[in-house]
Image 1 (cartoon, rainbow, N blue to C red):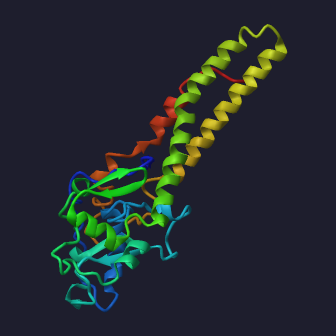
Image 2 (image 1 turned 45 degrees about the horizontal axis):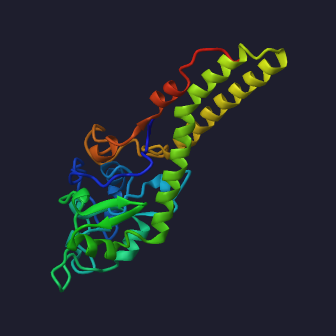
Length: 264
């Protein structure tokens, strides 16, 4: 299982469009059929504020209405692009609602940044759970999408603080267990040895709990779509910007619990 990083760094390259779904959708809401493609295409992560589904809902977002499809070229201005996949972006409801009908280019010539043509890392830095705009267009984009709405900062902070704590338990726990086991052999009494062994067992349990808690931030949610509107399933993988940041929980577990000594 791939686990999210404590903080998702802004992509250093534009997000590549690899999905080419069947375009046989019709009607005012035909674009909603693209949802499985969009979830995978953008790594279950809002294209704009970089909040992951796991930041928004602990047990899956399906049916809760917290994720929407954003039309980069507003359909309120021109409905011809309503079912154009290239005009559809994976967006949290907060970003979608914040933008409203704001134009791609405002009357001062500032433009909304497109995450599929612009590297977010060229325009934003992540500082203390805030996306700090570095360019004129980034400032316009941040304002329009409300990228640092307090409701977005809190989930970023929560993930970072929780995960760093759980990762510390995993990374430091093995050494602590080893130290407790070594001390138990020189405890000088059966009672002292038992206390140290019990302490080591408690640490092991804490590591297992930490691993379970870390899995709550799975990069690929349990309810991830098993198919999409593309031919074949080879596109059902995380985008490179997120895959390169994930933590492998199997390796983490092996590293944390590699001490083979019995605690019984």
